[in-house]
Image 1: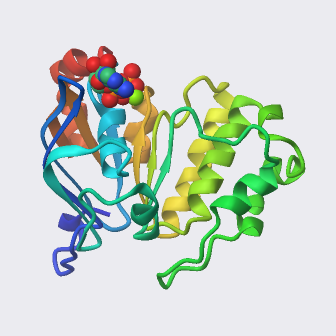
Image 2: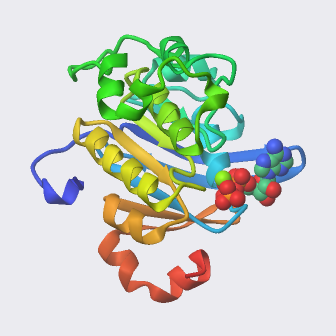
Amino acid sequence: MSASARPNVRSDPALEAKGLNTYYGQSHILRNVDFRVMPRETVSLLGRNGMGKTTLLRTLMGLARAQSGRIHLNGIEITGARPAAIAKAGLAFAPEDRGVFPNLTVQENLTLAARAGRGARPLWTLDRVYELFPRLAERRAHWGNQLSGGEQKMLAIGRALVTNPDLILLDEATEGLAPKVRDEIWATLRLVTATGIAAVVVDKNLEDLLALSDRHVIMSKGEIVFDGTTQTLRAEQALIHRHLGV
Ligand SMILES: Nc1ncnc2c1ncn2[C@@H]1O[C@H](COP(=O)(O)OP(=O)(O)OP(=O)(O)O)[C@@H](O)[C@H]1O
Ligand SMILES: [Mg+2]
């Protein structure tokens, strides 16, 4: 829900990043990126290949180091903190490659990630994840490397959920998945965000994201070039064509 829809309710951002500059070696990737996510908000992160979306998520999660800039999570500074500390502070990351341990079972993958929550929300337990993804329940004794792409994606989301985060970063949410599995991921994500978890979602499917998210952010060459609502973005056909190639 956007702040403008609730004019009397003021809340602080769940995540606020200011002036981020991230390099890979000599390559300047993120260029003065300001990025914020409000509590309960679902934000899409869009842009062509190589524009810096994954780098932004990795920087927020502490997997890439920002050379300058500051990041706050729930008002607490996490700039330069280790990924484990950032996870503990309430941020979760489901990476594009899914990060599933191939030689552990589904159940072991989830157990390893599980952590007690801090907020007032009901806890995401293994049982709740299995309810959300009945397919994972059926596969609980299977090894990570025995899972289909869709099942691995579900496991990656499940692993993020059992850390009981306030905000989940989901890279390439449905890449390479069959349409039916893709729809399953979107439906599940809606259930998750309805419980009050904020989300940043990267995906190539613009129409799906327009339907899913409250707000959309477009990156080009490491900079934010658009930040607005679905309605605003739909009206910007030239921008969509230029930066998303559709
Ligand atoms: N480990 C790395 N070392 C050096 N350069 C990298 C590394 N990872 C990414 N880059 C470069 O950083 C830039 C941004 O990459 P990034 O992966 O963040 O883009 P992206 O928007 O996520 O792209 P895609 O849509 O293909 O996933 C690209 O030019 C890429 O080649
Ligand atoms: Mg990427």
